[in-house]
Image (cartoon, rainbow, N blue to C red; front, side):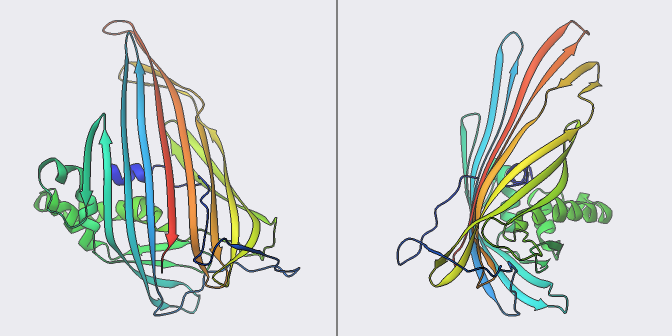
Length: 332
């Protein structure tokens, strides 16, 4: 799952602001008056909708000793997700059947290029690089989402797990307990952050132009505990195809804590302050009660000093970086 997790390295997700358009020309700015508007997801049993997602991710490292060694992995992934509302309970939590109906990947690692299109037969190095995408292609799973956009549960991923283990040729060597643990990690660490991007959390209060709200959530990076705070601000309302759209800007601020020194196997590590930033813009369809469009980016950089005395004195510096951009659009 290395490439899938590369895409999801920071699920903070905030970007290059995309421009919205409609079939009849430019969006029309509208005045909604003094009454504030409730941003809420409107799910009804039988609803079906489709999103396209494009993720561009790069991750690299530069190591300097007597010489400088650099490495970089990058990839562009394009998905088509189909969502089908199968039920909505009394608390307005909707259960979805989710299917990834198309996946295309273009990747490079240190100058070597790879590509994948869902449905093609994988073998050799292609199988090693892209098995997780093949395993998820056109294999439905379930999610539950509440009315403010929180993905509260991911279920029915058994077939995806079976496919992943089978494609790697290890299905018979994994115990039932190990399989359950793997499935739990897949659900919480990969699939939930992936589908959460289609359901950006909205505030429970009503909003108007210049309204702001924040969401905080923790994460970790090497020796640091990270506190992520994303601020959302409504900049304007507009109409696209006679539907009211709220335009919202996003900005990420982070704080961190933790000791910046550690020793492992005789090597002393000193970690610099992490540089993390993220911005973005989303369009929320007020009338339809769905995310219309989202463009986000995040950047991370950290420098590390490494010192060792055995078997001979050694000093090296390393810089790690990760850049993610993500674009989502409701297509029907």
